[in-house]
Image 1 (tube, rainbow, N blue to C red):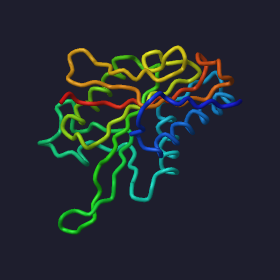
Image 2 (image 1 turned 60 degrees about the vertical axis):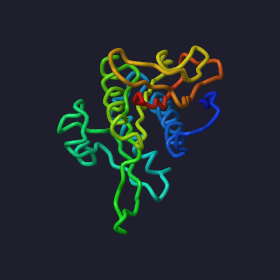
Image 3 (image 1 turned 30 degrees about the vertical axis):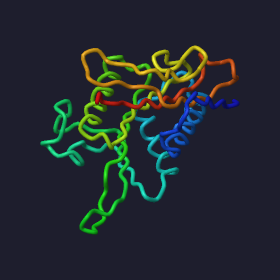
Image 4 (image 1 turned 120 degrees about the vertical axis):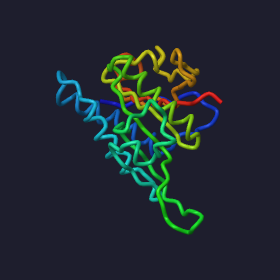
Length: 209
């Protein structure tokens, strides 16, 4: 199976290279698994586990990856958005090793990544987007991403008919924030097979100023 990588039209790349590489690898892995188990869709947990492996393999030394991390581990109770319960977890959190003003080494949360299958109910996808927007509102210096993965179909909410990222700002009704697709990676049998490709969409969330 030949692989196709689509470059989203953009004027500036402001997403991490290690994450882009991991998502491209995830589309290849998805195609490989479908060749082995065509009639058995992959579970969301399998995507999270493989993305964790791929990020870990590409992550620069200054970062550290934590999987299935409780928000309470890095957000204090008095700063935590009301959408996040005491036991709410993020699929993946990437911390940066920094030195604080006392000269001590510590970990600072830099990226929060949630993962969803494109076939998940819209309400579940929107719930993840809302949580990420809420975190971004409190911590604007943390990058918040939803990774949407589609097996052998195009996710029309995030990818156009031509196979390109839908880069316009999109909103969720009744919520002060928006999201947009930063990057779409895919693996396909042929350039023209946009409807049957494996997709991984990097969706960034933002809070209104």
